Amino acid sequence: MSGYRGNKRQQFGKGAGGRRGRDNDGVVVDENNPTIQRFREYATILDAKHDKYERIVKINRDITIEAKRIIFLLHTIDPRKNNLHKVCEEAKERLEAIFRNHFIAIAKELKDQDPYQYARAYTNGMQEFIEAYTFYEYSCGHDISHWNIIQEKLTFKSSPKIPNVPSKQDCEAKVLQDNIDSSTNCPLEKSKPPVTADSEGAVEVEVSCMLHPQDFVLGLGDLSGEIMRKCINSLGSGNSDSCFQHCRFMQELYKGFLSVTSIRSRDFSHKMITLRQSLLKSENVCYNVTVRGGEAAKWGTTDDAAAAQFQYQPSKEEDDEGVFF
Image (cartoon, rainbow, N blue to C red; front, side, top):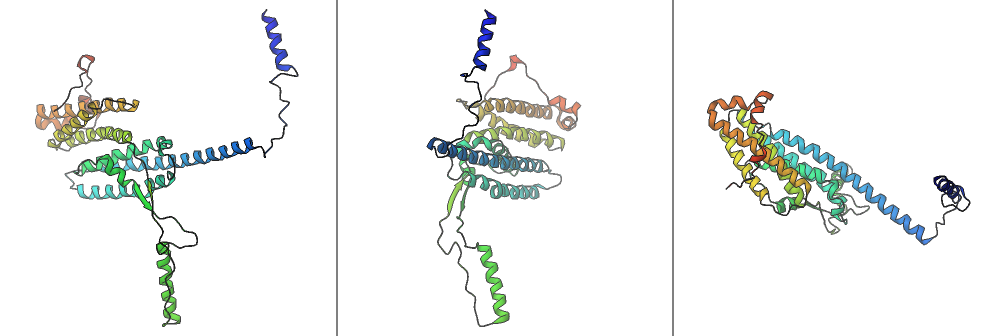
């Protein structure tokens, strides 16, 4: 019975009327067919969409790298060196450069497009940027910005380019050159300013880079790890009083995350676990400061033996979230 079935399969595959034959490979496709033309248009649209997606992914990588560098820069703040103002000014300039150079490029790519189709292309860079931006505000003593404020900063106004019309910088250079030529050749002749896009009354176009609320919340979750490192570094530098301030801020942040009931992201649960671990490490630092006093600084070094003292691992019986008031 099995041999009969095998022969039947072979006959079906090698038969003249079998569907697995390649007799139709040389058929010429009619390019004038409306169906073929429509699928050619679909292929062009999909290729353009994929190219746009890849361009946004490249910008996302640049944002991630620069945001990590800004975070490393902010960790160099040391009260003993009195470099708070200098580091904050440099971090502010680099953050504004990300707005001007990277996010405006994403906003132009998203113009007249559905931003939700490209949200996954730059979500990692956006979360890293939110972490760097909020860490800058926290390190400089500012209040953490609301989601709407950052969204307003991600909205830009750009004037459309008009063909054969020079830019403002080109016009200024042209006027300067004409004035120089007129002063050397004919002093009584005055040059006329060229026509610019502004003189034509061009309307500014508003473009925006969407900041998803979920990316904003996840970026705040990553902020807890940086504050935990700042708490331990403060102990190592002898500034034990600031450890309690960092710990209280993380408690308030953790309380806010606990108040979220409708969790629609798997990443949110992972951020909660990381946030809780960072909070426990910070609380253990404050405990050592309270118990050991001035001797706690030697326990806050970065070597493995000392860092092991802060690696508190709660058991399952102690798995209690708690609410801090």
